[in-house]
Image (tube, rainbow, N blue to C red):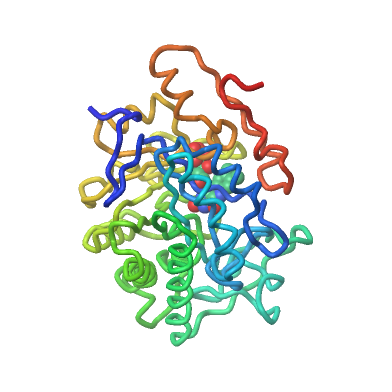
Length: 370
Ligand SMILES: Cc1cc2nc3c(=O)[nH]c(=O)nc-3n(C[C@H](O)[C@H](O)[C@H](O)COP(=O)(O)O)c2cc1C
């Protein structure tokens, strides 16, 4: 039975343990959306993770939807990310870049020219966008013209190449959480009648093409894909999520991607956790027989739950989000807990998740620090 503390092969790489750091937007890039030395320090503090998946990194200006998120489309950003990858590697860690296009979740303030954001179909997601000037109502996006999709693929390609230049160990395609590839996948957000809409294979085409672009740049054994089949964000509906995501997972298995990173339903504290028999919360284990590579599970894991998933064979590794925000030395804390040594966690402070300074970012103590 593997434990969280056993190494794991991912393509040509070996993760030193199976406690992975989930991608976490922290909005600490500078005004030019370039990672700073403080960002490098934050990631270096967490280099004991078996694998770090970076915060989501926009692939183009139009792909952005949140303030001060470090991108991968400008040379200055590549230089900033080099500080991060070098600092993580110096501490013996591995780090993948998460490639991000938010689609309709963006706002005209982020769009070159100030127009509406793009999406598979012109459906307003509702709610408010976070902009550098505060919250603003989201707008109805513009449906992408068929000829624009290859342009977005070329942006994914450029960002994947930039991730190589920046010294990452691989890339994770962000296919989860209601952003552009997820908007294409679901029949509630994709009403297209061309080759990218309608049937499940057509709706999965965007995700699979983006994955192929990453594979072209990196080779399949350094490409991961994140999916969230169980999202319950208003408007992100799919009438047959098991079939839709089952198809995507089987096709990604055929592409031979190095890992799949699958989220279960998450409660961030505002809403109740899903009922155990809620059919829209699809367990990670449902996808296990459909996929041959490394499977990473995420959302709401504790030591006990992670150990159970590994023992049952439902997952090969577990990604931790909020616990890694507050506990830079999370693998050491979990190892002590597993050995029966009472070891409390630092508690994450939600009020500083997206604020700009060092507070709540690089000041969570490791064990033995005060
Ligand atoms: C502050 C914050 C930022 C996040 N940013 C991202 C992100 O950039 N990309 C992503 O795929 N998920 C993001 N997530 C989701 C986390 O990766 C993770 O799925 C979630 O926190 C649930 O895992 P946990 O229960 O271990 O925290 C974010 C979550 C939080 C709390």
